[in-house]
Amino acid sequence: MINIRRLTESDLDTFIDIRIGQLREEGATEDIDLRPALRDYYDRHMKDGTFVSWIAEDSGKIIGTSGMSFVEKPPYFSCPSGRIGLLSSMFTDKDHRRQGIAKKLLDLVVNDAREYGCGCVQITASDMGVLLYTDYGFRKNGNFMQYNL
Image 1 (cartoon, rainbow, N blue to C red):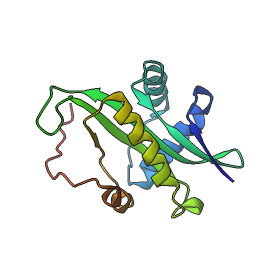
Image 2: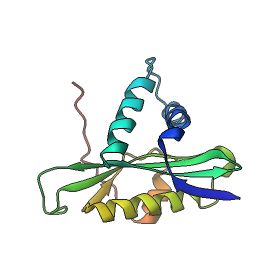
Image 3: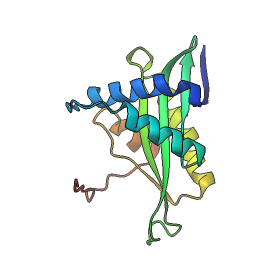
C-alpha cells in the first residue's frame, strides 16, 4: 500500500540520494558532490518554511518525491503577489510510474504553494514530466533563460 506523507529531516539522506539520481537520469554529467550543498539547502529551507515536500512510500521505501521552494520577486501582472512556487524533485520510481502517484504529490505541493500565497508555480520540466504538467494545466513559457555566474 502506498503511503503519502510530508518529508521529515530524518528522510533527507534518502531524499538527497533520490534527487541526485533524478538529476543523473535527466542527463546531468557533472562530477561534483552535491550532497553537502543539498543538505544545507534542505536543512535551512525546511526550517524557515520556504521548502516543502511530500513523499510517497511503499512498504517503508520512498518511491516518489516532490518539492516546492517559495521565492518572492517584485510583483508583475501575471503574479501580483510576487510569490512564486518553484517546483522541483518530482520523481517516481520506475516500478511505480503511471499509477497517479506523481499527480497526487503535485496536488499536495501546489496546494502548499496556494496556502503560502503564491501567484504561480514554475518548473523546468524534464522530457518525461512534460505530459504530467501540461495535463495538470501548466503552460510552456519559452522565455526561460539562465546565466551562470
